[in-house]
Image (cartoon, rainbow, N blue to C red; front, side, top):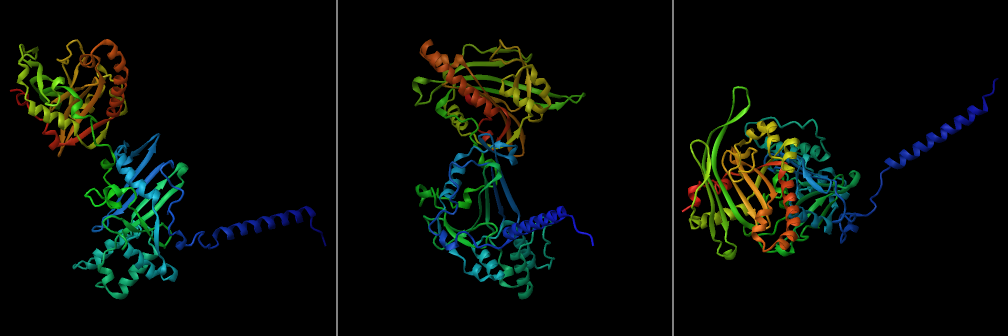
Length: 518
């Protein structure tokens, strides 16, 4: 009888030891465990104790459900550098700090007031599912299915209930719901009652770590006009907590400004943006230049865009009297007309008192309130030209894109005859304003899309305008560097986008030159 090699015996023992270790690790990993903290022990503590205002955030996801249609609603914010951005809005910056603060502040504090865990401890799947429905903490995908199922069951035409989406996992709650419907019949109270879906919130930190995962449900009995107490649940956990979302809202208690927590979250991406287009006050405006012109863009025989039917009623420049700023008195400073041959010339003499103060004041007010309703991303090369203020001949390569949105380059700029480069114009005219700190903002109005009007905005530093408002060269030398920096920052913000404003806002600027002159 042959003896086994001692080396084989050692190897066999080692393999057995490794297998035993692997089995032990697997057993420990998948062995059911009791929670580290009993649900009742959370009462009086913050629900998310490792999350605060200073925690770095990489991604935010909101998911909700339309209670009538069962349609899933989603919105995602993604951090790029120092900014949260909106993938659904061409990566536009989510600069609405007030909206974000009113969401984060309650989540950071979020005290647990009570726990509804009797049904959970019973282990009865039907009771747990019913608890989740009553508290409105069904996961959005589960609730969406139930809304559609209830709508189908209550339909008089007897249509077949919708099948579960292929990419959605049917939960135990759904199984219990369907079984209950089959047991009690289509006219059961359960079948007729549409479930209230939870609002799902997920906030991720660096390296994708989970900071907040929460299903926000209905208001709890402890709620009042001054307290927003709600039922919530952590995904994957059946326990339902009552927490207080009142958070930072004490200043708004009892006022029309008080917003319940779910209402602070919008699934419309533009609501997360800073919708203030120009970020100026009406008191900042020193001069206004009104360009009254129109044209249309058509494609030439070679397919290139060409502006046609160009009409220009003229240009007028108005200055607000700094010595009488409270009364907001304007004077006509310059007026130009264009003759039939396309030649521009100054109209002299001009009557400074021919400015229509009411119209110009309304215009300055409207500029300070101009609100963005949508954006379109410029091609990167075109955005670079605007950012670097290279708006001359290099724009020729992008005339197709500009024409698509209702802009073209025509002639030279009559207000700057020393510049030989073509001037950008909008098919619905434009306005230029200079602020008291020497920033010139050009606002061109382009094509109308449904009930929206495209705007092209850019900014630059105007040293001469600042010099006209300062007392001497020393003051000018002190103010100019900071003013130039502010102009560059403003232009960088405006450069990447075609902005869309509402047509009703545009109507406030759609005056003809005759409207601003007596």
